[in-house]
Amino acid sequence: MEQRAKIAPDAVHHPLFARFYGRFSETADRRAGLAAHRRDLLAGLSGRVIEIGAGNGLNFPHYPGAVSEVVAIEPERGLRAMAVRAALRADVPVDVVPGAAEALPVKSEAFDAAVVSLVLCSVRDVPRSLAEIRRVLRPGGELRFFEHGRAEGRLLAAVQRAADRTLWPVFFGGCHTARDPLAAIEAAGFEMVDCRRLWLPEKGPRHPASPCVLGAARRPDLG
Ligand SMILES: C[S@@+](CC[C@H](N)C(=O)[O-])C[C@H]1O[C@@H](n2cnc3c(N)ncnc32)[C@H](O)[C@@H]1O
Image 1 (cartoon, rainbow, N blue to C red):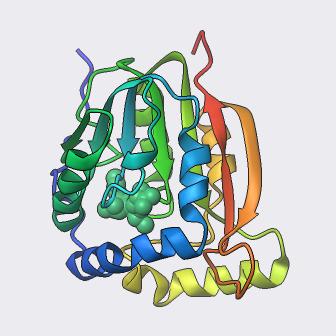
Image 2: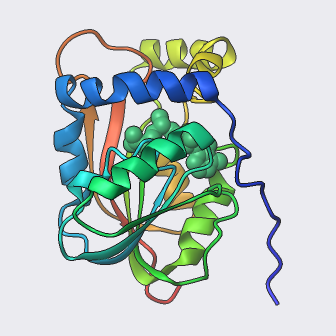
Image 3: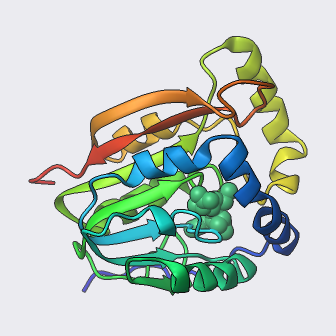
């Protein structure tokens, strides 16, 4: 039988960040255009979906009606409580579950699609998290991602590395800005289907978490 290391459901403990995110993320969604990106992220999904690191549930209102069930994994207790409230308002059934990306508490090949938004920056172990996502997707299943990551420009990339070594992860719930989500997704054995780069906010001041990628990758049919 397959043995997987267990991770405590409350392994992520960032109560101050949770309160900050709970208070300001809805405004950021409206003002920085995130809500439109969330709609794009989830457009066309159907069947059983697992969302990893669901936060306070800002994606929930954007799931299309063809989605039969969302299992929303959230390890931070305060954010999870907010996600439970958001799930009650969602148009599709959403089950909010404690757990961490590195050891997803679900069966293998049980989902048609997986969703990560602004999460790979914060997980402790990116390759392990992506291996878990691949495990729980059926062959041919899709990973939808909306992630910030490493800047293409050298100056901003240097600022990102400095931010990651100092206070950024402390202030922003373990977030890192210089990771490369696209390279990590491909290294985990996904086939890239679609991807575009964008800035958050689109106009206005840029910061270390501004360069983003939004797209879809597929677990190969035979993989
Ligand atoms: C910036 S928030 C994004 C929340 C939400 N996905 C969104 O789009 O608004 C980062 C999220 O990643 C979660 N997270 C951090 N480490 C995690 C891990 N190891 N496994 C799963 N989620 C994790 C945090 O608890 C938080 O909910």
